[in-house]
Structure formats: structure tokens, C-alpha cells
Amino acid sequence: TSGKILVKGGTVVNALHKEVADVYIQDGVIASVRPNIIVSDDVTILDATGKYVMPGGIDPHTHLSMEFMGTETIDDFFTGQAAALAGGTTMNIDFVIPVNGNLSAGFESYMNKAKNSVMDYGFHMAVTRWDETVSEDMEVMVKEKGINSFKFFMAYKGSLMINDELLLQALKRCKTLGALAMVHAENGDAVAEGQRKMIALGITGPEGHALSRPPMLEGEATARAIRLASFVNTPLYVVHVMSIDATEEIAKAKMSGQKVIGEPVVSGLVLDDSWLWDPDFTTAAKYVMSPPLRKSGHDRALQAALSTGILQLVGTDHCTFNSTQKTLGIDDFRKIPNGLNGIEERMHLVWDVLVESGQISVTDYVRITSTECARIFNIYPRKGAILEGSDADLIILNPNASFKISAASHHSRSDTNVYEGMTGKGKVEVTISGGRIVWDGELKVIPGSGKYIKMPPFGYLFDGIEKADSADLSTLRSSNTRSRPAT
Ligand code: URP
Ligand code: ZN
Ligand code: ZN
Ligand code: ZN
Image 1 (cartoon, rainbow, N blue to C red):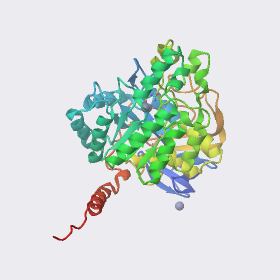
Image 2 (image 1 turned 30 degrees about the horizontal axis):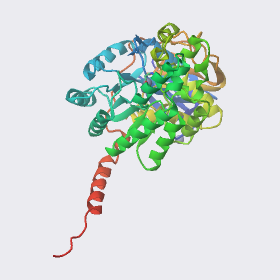
Image 3 (image 1 turned 45 degrees about the horizontal axis):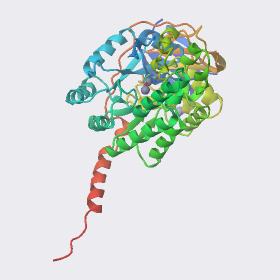
Image 4 (image 1 turned 180 degrees about the vertical axis):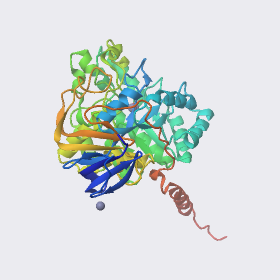
């Protein structure tokens, strides 16, 4: 191919607007978007009549090549991203896990893991320890390495968790650097207690995972993180919101004007915890993730929260282990590697559950699967839009074709799929990444072709924060000033 592509006659959808137009792609970028573009005959033409042409999905939450719970995720940057492309996602933001608490070493290690990338990617960074070195390294990450978000684990006591004292210091640091603080919100101390209780009761199977860490522990940690972020006046991003309890806290904070973002993940939107009671260990174990899947009802509430704007974007927390790896916890649910798939399924399932069902519009679909993520992480409109000058990362979705999910046909390296057998309307027929057709029913990926996307600090969530700080100060001064009685 010439590297020049014309996507003809489709409905081009952006987050706020859709219209029938052609999209002309050259040198990896979108050169033109308007009706009836005339091109020379060395251009590849794709007919998108009757179909939607949309920005490729951006998955804000993945774990590829992550060492975790005594093993390593089965999908690396090659297989995970190939799966993503086959499902219409053209960028992922993965989590760098520090090496022995060291951020720079973690960053180098993940840059190396990502060498065989087949699509663009960015990084968040987990902070699992706190001292002067970590604090200084955060500045290096932000100013030199293109990282503008840090994740703190309020759970995984004894490994990744940091306590409130350290979390507060870290939140303050995020604020000065213009980096977005992200939290895994579950009360890790209470989870440890709940786990001991289950084991003492003789409950060692996967159902013990759900029973040991109920929604209230997610609600409590979400509320606590929100208060601490408010106390230092910095924006907060809550990853993998799984429950009504956590969603209510986010809604409350939003109504008081606080800048809080909630990210549900696909599993939480379409699955419930009944799987964890399956008598077959292999079946039940594949659904173990944290926070756990919840009782039926939470899933529909999360959908409603997304459709009303209480929650703003959808991730996956793609973190795959095959059935053999899951047997690490055959005698003890605490040792089942936490995580499940979704990077390939997200675009289809969100379409089916929210658009096809009539809960959201096509433009809202683009917003929650792509544009909002690009805005939050400050890479819009290079990503998340079909506009002149944007990167040529886009998909053609046929609303009249169907998708069907199965481990037998998926592109993840995992031998199982938590969405096995699910079908629905709306199929990603073509994925274009970096101006190349990488999926048209078959994958055409080139290892090493994905670019690292640096994400600059002080994204839109920081707008007005400095002003709010000085307003606070003047309010404090005036409300505490009283005239002294004359002497
Ligand atoms: O179970 C999960 N979510 N595994 C990945 C690590 C995390 O907490 O995001
Ligand atoms: Zn227009
Ligand atoms: Zn997490
Ligand atoms: Zn995660």
C-alpha cells in the first residue's frame, strides 16, 4: 500500500458531533475530513457507507507484562496490543510498576517490555513506597519521561499498599507537579481481616474472594481518597469503580464541585459475582479480580452512572493469567492471581450494552471510549478525535454486523475468556493505527511500530486549581478577621 487511505462515505463521529464525510489519511495523520474528497489512484479506498468511522479506542487501564502475585501476566505488549487492535482499540495506557520501589528502574524496565509494541501507548506509574528519592523521581518522570499520572494502592497490604500518611504526601506531590493522582480504592487493612475470617471459616475457594472484600470496603476507601484529595485540593481519578457504594461517593463529591473522575471497567459493567460460586475451580478462578465482581445490580447501576455522566470513561484492567497460573490459588483464594481480560472486548461490549441498548448516543460512545481519556491525560486532540492533524488511529464499525466472543478466536494469549459466548450487534470491521490498516478481519501488525506517547502535566483537571487555592486563603482570612474593640 501507498500509505495513503481514503475512508469514504461513512458517518464520522467525534465526541460532540457526527456527520457523513470522507477521511483522507496520509503519513500517519488525518489530512482532511470533509464530504466528497477526490484522490489520485495510488490511494487505498475503503467504503464506509452505512457504517461509523470513529476514533480508535483508548484503554486507560491495562497491565501487560506485569509481574504480579508470584507470576507474570500472559499477555505482553505484543499479544495484548494485537488483541486490542483486533477489537478496535488503538492506544493503551499501562501501569509501570517500580522495581523495588524505584521509579526510574521501573520506567526503564517497562520501556524495554514495550519494545515489541504494535500500537501507540503511554504509561501511568504506580508509587508503592514513599521517601525523598521517590518524591524527586516523580519530578523526573513528569518533566523528562512523559508521565502525568501516578497510581496509589490502598489495598494489597504487605506488597503494593501505601498508608494514609504516605498517600497524603504523595497527593501533595502530584498537585505541585500537575500530575493526576489515581487510586485503587479498597481498605487494605479490612480486606486482610476479611480474608483471615474466610480462611478461619474454612472458605478457601474463589467465593471467599468476593466475601472477604465487600462493596463497603470499596466505598470507604473511595470516600477516604476523595476527602484526602479535597484536603490538598488536587484532582483524583478512581480506577476500576466496581460498586454502587464507590459510585455514590464519586457522585457526592462531584455535586460539591470536586474534580473526581471515576473509571468503571468492562467486567464491572457486564458481569456479576455469581461466577465466583461456580463449583469448578478453573471456571470460578478466571473471574477473580480486585475489587471483585459484585452482586447483580451493581453492573446496571454502573451503566446508568456512565450514561448520566457520573462516571466518564471506560477501561478494562486487562490483566490476564491462563488457567494454569490461576491454580496457584487452588487451595487458597488469596493466592489466585487477580485479573481478567477485556482489551479486545471493550469496544464491542460497550457498544452493545450502552449504544445498542439505547442508553447512550454514538457521540457519547466516542467520548467514553476515547475522547475523554485523551482529554484527561492531556493528549487531545492528537488522540481521541477525527480532526485534521490528529493521529490516524480510527475504526470502521458496522452497526448491522455481529460480534461473537470466544477464547477459540480471540487474540489474547490466555486460554480462557471471561466473556466466553457473548454476542451482540456492532462489529469493528477495520482498525487503522498510525495510518496503516492493521485489522480488517485479519491482523497485519508490525512489532516495534507502536510509539511511546509522552503525556504532559497540568491537564484540564488542573484548570482553576491555583485560583481556588488563593480563594480558599482569602476566604479563610476574611472569615477569621474580626475587628478588635477600641481601647
Ligand atoms: O485484579 C486486578 N485488578 N489486577 C490488576 C491489578 C490492579 O489492582 O489493578
Ligand atoms: Zn460539521
Ligand atoms: Zn487496582
Ligand atoms: Zn489494574
